[in-house]
Image (cartoon, rainbow, N blue to C red; front, side, top):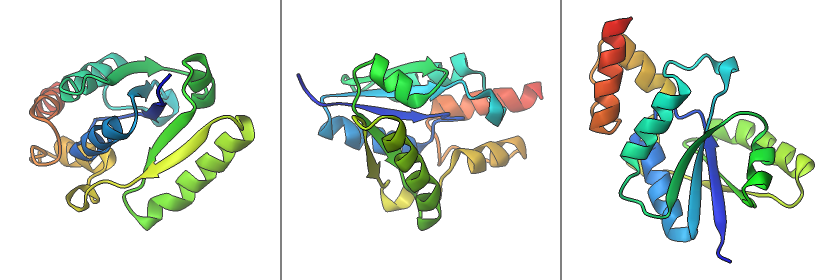
Length: 161
């Protein structure tokens, strides 16, 4: 049995930074599950089904990557799918405190699950889903930060708003 990993998040929307992390994780792990959280507490811009569809489009060239939506505790999802590694992305030092708390909570809730931190390539460190959403909603060009399908969906969503 190979090593499988889980990369959870809201991916609202999936960015080039996410893609970079997934592409590199797919070289390290035999199978990577991208678990897109419903997370209604964050009031996502895009519905869960659309976020899953976009992630599948963006990551289609990676044969050992699977994209699914989920709700509930991440550790429960990981256990249900036999995943004992959780990947978390760190863009900057400012991300570390929150991610460190999450990793410690994960360890407290599930001692059999490890958290692995990965950093994106330097050119992606400033890209966040939050910034991409804000730029798009204000009419800015996000094509340098996201896959063309994501940029098109954000533009379509902006027109509907």
